[in-house]
Length: 197
Image (cartoon, rainbow, N blue to C red; front, side, top):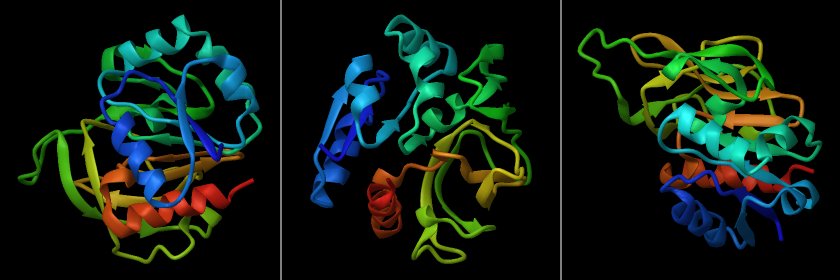
């Protein structure tokens, strides 16, 4: 097993598994704390509302486990947002692994919310997760909330405001975009994650 994917109830679990299969990786979807704790790598996906996702993680006792993990962890889209302390979506208390708040995107300059579609990355810092990722590479976003740029930001994107597209703190990484839907650039991000130990 190369990684476990936490069963967070999102509709993107199958497409995420297929993306790893295309890389020759074996994954398993689970909400079992023992399986998550012993996995070499952990992916926290998410689609839907922050409050619902956090309630599911708490009910499965995964919310208490996640901050204590020492292996590489990758949060994707809502999964990245859940790594933060709180979300403006329903004023939800999240996992608190990353010390900041996720904020609602504001529509402006002809940019509707949700932010849905291809957008360019602006890498800010070197990191193994960004190996082979170039300035202005395109990735696919679907979200209405975003994290501000901070010292945890590895790459940003512009959508009327500058937002965190990739973040890292210690062994926790997050992508606001969906790598499983981001063609060769997303595949490279996932392949880089599989190399982390």
